Length: 171
Image 1 (cartoon, rainbow, N blue to C red):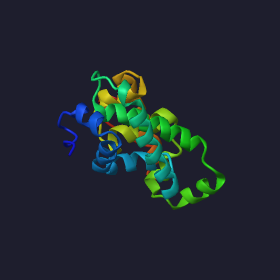
Image 2: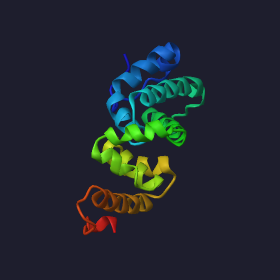
Image 3: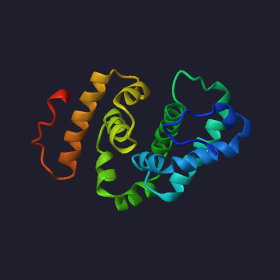
């Protein structure tokens, strides 16, 4: 069994057991990754394809994993890359089906790519601002700007109005 998210990941165990342990790891972290995927995709079939591709890619790239970053962060970067690819390939039918998604996820579609990813990684996936900045390859200050503008756009897109000053640290 693989330890919880905050415990150090025994990469040797994951490498030894291979695909089985990767599937187990995703199973333990599926809720946060599912929420991340919903920010990009709109239906169950797309989500299943996303998880399938992510598991295969993590297995294939496992030998390249370096302890310079956490396993969770490394997997998240792979997951986001696949999310981007799949969301670019979405069919017209998938876009129509997206109308049945919760309002928050529909509103996320109106954010710029980096705003969306900053909001999703920080507030939906729950990773630190430092890790989110690292994944997006921006400074923490730039991440804070993206969060501020993203939240502003979300409020406007969800009908809460554009007047919102937010926390001074994000201005």
